[in-house]
Image 1 (spheres, rainbow, N blue to C red):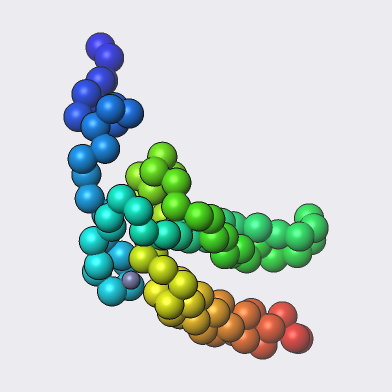
Image 2 (cartoon, protein in one colour; image 1 turned 60 degrees about the horizontal axis):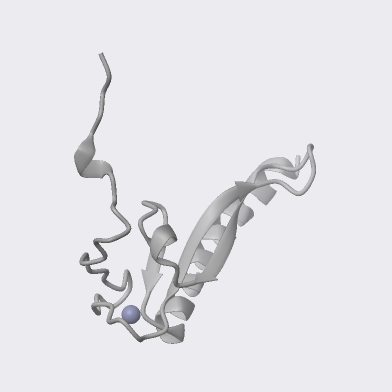
Length: 102
Ligand SMILES: [Zn+2]
């Protein structure tokens, strides 16, 4: 028995869905310059603890469907998201540093 979910298939011909900024809620138009941002686990070498790497990419419709991608309506909202992310990461880095200092 095959499990097919036709509703999940996104046809390239139907770009009628709308996106909203994850920071301010603004709705995306067709000509504005939006950004995508997401984080991925990353460790710089095998012994390093895995941390999150923050990634930013100019708007790309295919990628915008990724559940982990944040949608940002412009530089101001992108910078707000970066600020939030930095604060979270600084918090976890601080906790990790204290943990591994002994
Ligand atoms: Zn925004």
